Amino acid sequence: MMRFIWPLVAFLILAAFLYKGLSLNPREVNSPLIDKPAPAFSLPQLHDPAKSFSAEEMKGKVWLLNVWASWCVSCREEHPVLVELSKQNIVPIYGLDYKDNRADGEGWLTRGGDPYTLSVSDMDGRVGIDYGVYGVPETYLIDKQGIIRYKEIGPVTTEKLRDVILPKVAELQAK
Image 1 (cartoon, rainbow, N blue to C red):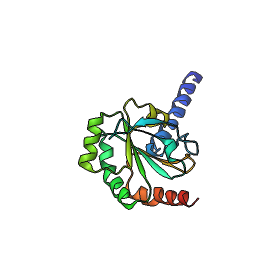
Image 2: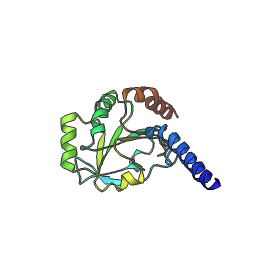
Image 3: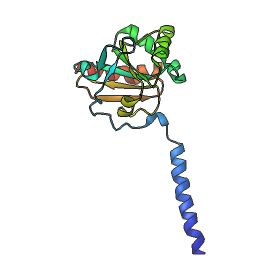
Image 4: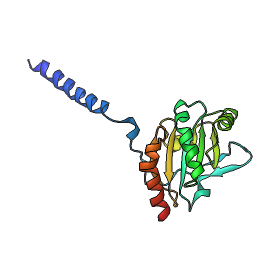
């Protein structure tokens, strides 16, 4: 009889973990980079590969880093929200074109509008790995000291922008 109880107990414990895991929201994955310095990088600019851009250039400014790609379906969902945000000039948005062909990235921005102050090209995805990118799109809010204060996994929505991101931007800009 005892030999049947232990497998049953093990099964019930595993089932409980599975049940708990299925109830979690994948967009609410805590990033170990929150409240830590943003990883340093220097990458070629998408529109002018002869020029580079580094996160160091943004010290003293609150800014958003949006990881996107022309092949990303969810990026199409968030793109109009970013275009509208850029027109408001509340916070600069910098793009990280992730594992994408330069011509495809440029063409996508030409067709859909370019919300970015500038975009850099991360063709091999190394900077994305440093930032802990799970998948595109992802958006990082970085403060004046270069510390990541917020990470949005998945498309930025109008509601998330209004209710979470912009209040955090205002708070960080006031400091």
